[in-house]
Length: 218
Image (cartoon, rainbow, N blue to C red; front, side):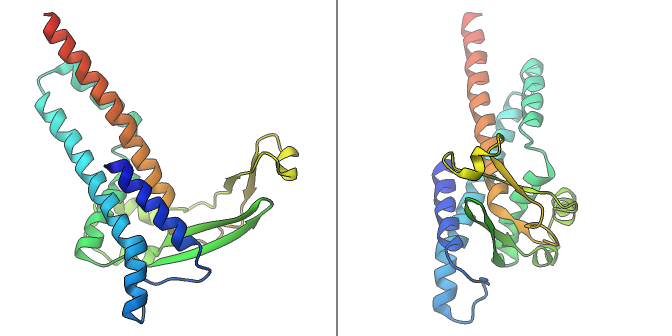
């Protein structure tokens, strides 16, 4: 279900990205507000809700096996490797509360032109996020330090692109895209956190299966 919600979220991002203007969720008309809500806010929240439920379930499993020292040691190592305690993860889980108790995110669009075409970013207003006082310390730190240093963006180039053939890395960098950008690009964050959770889930299922085999063998 988490993957299904994530796919719906990606589809909503693609739809919104096609609109060639700045979008505010607090639109002037009810029709505009409902359109944006249906195509972004609802699938985004569903994705957040499922992500939160899955990560909470991980904690339940850990608590149920707390007396198994060997398992807990492996659990903690894999949890850390998958960055499930990172500031980014805390931020994504905090977005669920932000939407529930504060407001629907204010979304803007930035588009940059590359040799292979356009790259569109969906950004959530950093100032509007910091207006919410319900963030955990880690989540707030993530917001405040996001793109504190200007980082070049790397865009994959299609294989038959002339520019790509001249660059063995297959990537083009643009330092200007994020210059003076104070807002947060949400889609890559969601994708990274979901992928990390899926990888951890796969490890957890395998680890629990091994534990069961050992118990049966004994």
